[in-house]
Length: 160
Image 1 (tube, rainbow, N blue to C red):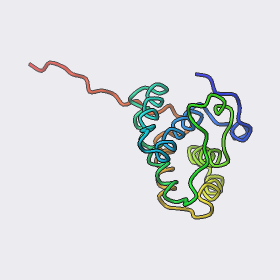
Image 2: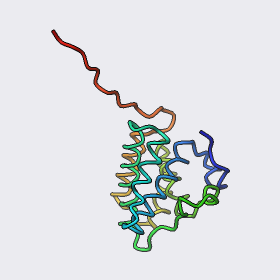
Image 3: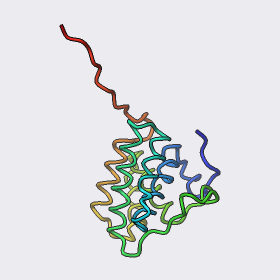
């Protein structure tokens, strides 16, 4: 899977493919919260499962939805984001999108000071515990440098 053309701020961070994928999934959830009747969250789940398979994609999509919800509850002004269906948006990111991915980027690498700064920027200084908790939960489960844990199906066997 190739990383989209660079968004300068995200390129400077050194985002990995997982974080680029998270941005795409997050945009669908942001769209869903903006227009609930459109049910864009379903596309978020679809994109995540296409990118990472069901075993990883479904929990990634769920965790992303939880994080987006926490951020939107924290911020009364909403989040500026690009339309996930806009092909030209793949090479752009809003300031809010950069802050969201930067927060996850630093949390996934256990870079506490930088993660704290990114949370501060994303939440406009509120340091909301739900945003921090959901971000850390996602970052811990899908930390950088480690392949996402595969969920193994139980093996069936015939017992005499």
